[in-house]
Image (tube, rainbow, N blue to C red; front, side, top):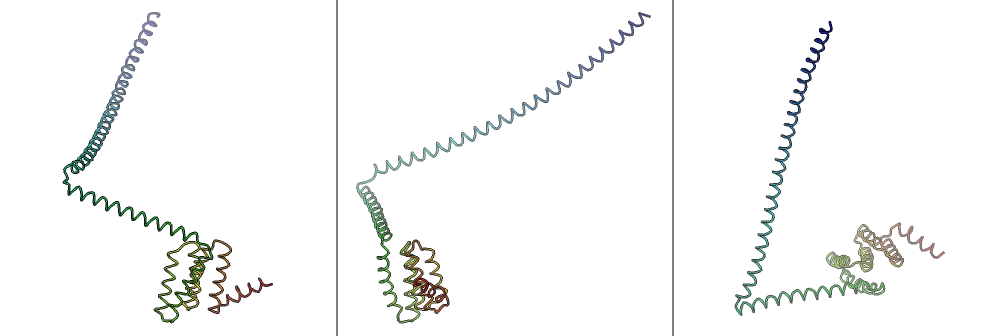
Length: 244
């Protein structure tokens, strides 16, 4: 009975050992497969990195080649210019110096013109209101003489002179030329819409109280010439209120 038990135990131990051996073998195979897959993946990644590195090196080499080529071309251009000066005849040298002198003269003339223009612009911008009004009064007399015949052509010529002045000035000058044109527009009946258009433009240019008063004067002048109801409502009533 005891022998039978020992034999049974030995049989079980033998079977367990066999099972463990089979399991170990399976695990080893699995580990081998896993390691093989990992090695294959690493080799692929390394392969792609090598390709990318080679492409980047190739691009860098190409850029360096292009830069070296451009540098060589510039150096050759400088050398050619120097050699051309060395090889030029006295006549060619004289012609080159003459051409250089002409270019320098043109640049100097342009700088002088620009300087004069800047000085005139500064002078225009620093004019007092009284000076501007005197200038515009003289201008208005001139254009009214042109337009006094009343013909379409003469009025259009005078109108064109005003619009040219408006477009070529700025600041206070532009404001006063604009309200002067609004008055001209009303005097020669060029249309209420036309007059209002330039009154609106003048309104946007107002910078101080004096300009605001001059604007109101021009606006009431236009309304009075056209017999507009606005004259009574916005000008006469305002004048009466001011007197009171």
